[in-house]
Image: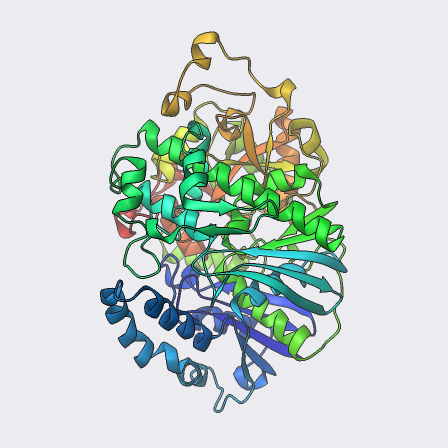
Length: 609
């Protein structure tokens, strides 16, 4: 049985296909169109999923499931405007034509789009609920037979936070917190207020937080959010405009914090860092209270997480450390893209009542669910692009060459196997570097990624060595847990260095792996596993043999504002638009010093994020 899941029309459109209970393929539309967070109908991703499953058209798909219910979302929109009337009339006036023309009649629109893929008549189209899709993506893909499931995001139809229990092929949502009360939207409001873009800049706020002090946390708790002991909460909506307006915060919010929002690209001050630290601290408090309460109430030993808030890896690390649950598992595509996968799994298990096969690792196959390219296909594309390249005889030679480049301090693009599904580069479409290099963080941020200097990088470490380098002895293949660097690898700071504040902390090495050690000695850890990504594991293993260090820098293969690269051509174009030293595509190696094509002003091709 083939079940297709679709998410679209908000942000991060995607498609996913489940065949006889196995996740065959999943991909975000942005990777094909090169438009970051592309919300349009995922024609390219859908076509890829069909090809990966060996299907000629949608006529061979048994069930299609959309990831949310537009009528419920429209109900929420109307009731919200009525509740706040006459406030928000301009927002209402702006939204209604779009809803009345397209979104309210989404079923007809979807049928027209599906017809382009060989479905003459779609009788098997179903609609899941937004948070049910998130919960399904977390539980049904997890390694657990039974678990509590917590989903947290901005908003679906009505729900912003939901609790479910999963058992076998069953999933029951027990209760929800409803819009406008939303932990995700509180975080987005502070993202907006500190000058970053909502729905893409939240991870910047998380990365900025360790540079500040949570000076405003009590102010947030006293005025913006009322948090109960069980983690349930309510927001004081008199401070926010997102329910009815075209901005996140209002003048009352700005007066509370003593200034208007920071403008985009303006210099960051200590105030923004303290605001980031404050909203991060409040978020962690809510999440920890919620998970403690869930463990006590349900008696479950396992926890699954999904929704955009589940990408807050600092909070996730504290949930694991709290040990209210014995084990936790986080869906790597926790945001709206993962809703497509959840919709497909909902269709297969809940609608069709098909049995579930529990994989002891998980069902995500390392999240390597996107397209791959053979060396012949890559060579043809690189030749057309004018690349000067060396095709090596086998993977062993490629690994040896690449490990030596890393050991020599080179920054390189790494394009191998199937593309990752979700927002993190996991060793298939990655930029890699030497974690021991004190200069690597600033080089990658400023000369390769073209992004803010404060942004931290993740360490990729061999699973068998993770506990020797980090205060973590747990699988973290999806880069969704933060843990401190172990004491023996830390550098003792001078008294003068300890007095530094804010961005002044940035250039002080914190450990023997300074490129991946944040200013608070934390690291967003990815564990490399031989069974899910053998080439990546082999590369880090050889790097360890050469250097004694089993840790490399891993960041997504793109520049700021660009989606992660997908094809070999995408990889070469990004390589030539940045200061990367080398590019490795399959068994093909390219050196920047040997290239003859003219470098383009690549950074200008994409909007700032």
